[in-house]
Image (cartoon, rainbow, N blue to C red; front, side, top):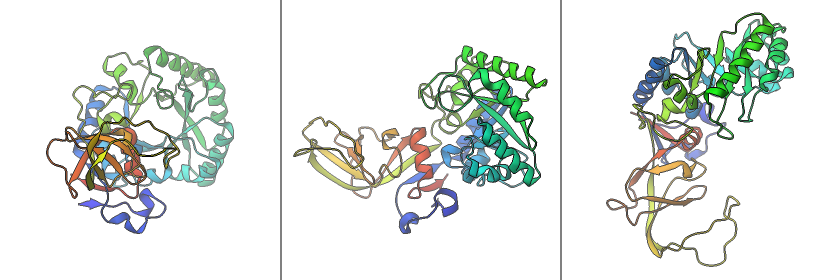
Length: 371
């Protein structure tokens, strides 16, 4: 059965047509479960299943838990609230640092949050005290990718500041690489992170229970037996969902890569010149492009656009189909060399990369079909 997103789960408001027709994301939770188990069986620590690639989808989250995840994590509070509540004893982690306006919601919806800023740590501590709970924090450490995190040399002081606040406790530290500049988590990078953790432990006078050594891009170190032995946790999303290594995009050995497919209907097929005619400027997204003139080609349009997904992160499943470009609501395909005929009304399927998957899962225009 195809399910369309409800307003609370995937958008603030559903357009009238969001529940009829449109692209469909097919989800196979059993594949997700098996991939999670492959990680859990090979990592001697806690697996945190990252659900943001599916907007906190509860069935996918359940598959991660059934596959051995000890906790679930997401970057948005709305998604944390979607996670399963049917009796499982697992922690919910907020991956993105909260804004000051979110701290009350954070301590009510998350057991653990990533933190870096003294002012927000203080606000979180105050919110936790008001709610009568002790909230656990992980100090995010920037080990080179230059996204979030304190610099390694600043970890001891920020951990000490947080540890002195009532209402929160420092559970550990988390390294992150890859998302902004593609920095690869080498053994040396992780060693420097662990060195900073141990300096923080010396300052606090106690061992930190969570040493979160990375995400899916750290699995190659783990599987090669080169991950630092102080690592107690990995935060894994892409490898479980897509079976791929983010550092290369290649499939991980023995992992399954068919947990998801995105499909859309063909709404036009015509022979057309491949090059535009007339002067050209910027397109609807403010971008300019150069188009190769390949003569007259068979063109198809599918009801899927950049509002629905990251079209450049899709790979057509049918041999010979090529994505030419996309606007808000249309993807243009060259089907001249397609295997078999392509007609209006046909459904064409695509394999999504992580960015395309995340955007499709968050779109109110994309339905979800569970198999």
